[in-house]
Length: 228
Ligand SMILES: C[S@@+](CC[C@H](N)C(=O)[O-])C[C@H]1O[C@@H](n2cnc3c(N)ncnc32)[C@H](O)[C@@H]1O
Image 1 (cartoon, rainbow, N blue to C red):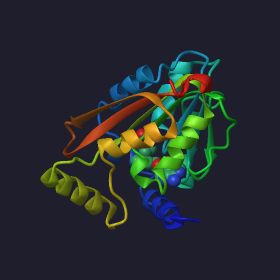
Image 2: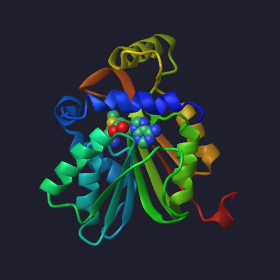
Image 3: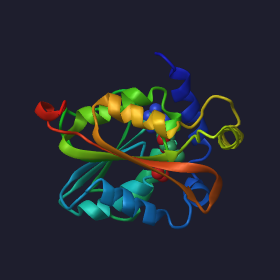
Image 4: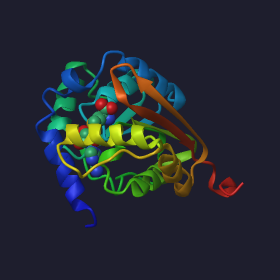
């Protein structure tokens, strides 16, 4: 499989970070970011929501509260150690009837076309071997007029800022394998996959001033109006 080393790299990377992930990597105020993601994705009670690359389930838990007992959240991830942490947390919070977890690779989402009310994907695009394919899969499984919202680190266009961002990722990853994508690259992933009304925002978070973050959303129009 093309770029299969990227899957293995991500699995190795998170294997040793899973246990302390929430305390080390989830910043204070992250609930507020989740709230914005949920609002932008227009998630409501009773929805079926996909949390792509769910990790330790931080977003999945917030989404579960938003969809309520009648809703469903599916958290997909490639790392069994991250999913184990998610499972423990979800059980502890009594959310296991709402949130289901599944280990998978990102190239094929195990869901039928047009079956999902909303998709959230947090801080994972820079690990994906093929971000176009992931975005196209998200588009496929969404119901018409529903939204996907993604947040991740963003590679700035400015040469100096780009260098700082690239170095930050390399130092934290301790390899030269991965990098963030620029806002334009993100927009291309969405637009080439068929999403309409693609909006993106770049912003800095106070806990990390070395690189900006991007939030991007896209809507799947009805197939008959896709070209409009
Ligand atoms: C930085 S964590 C983010 C977790 C969570 N979305 C959050 O916001 O806290 C990135 C997650 O992406 C997962 N991941 C990386 N590559 C993946 C792939 N190709 N397919 C599915 N999940 C992947 C990792 O295992 C990890 O749990």
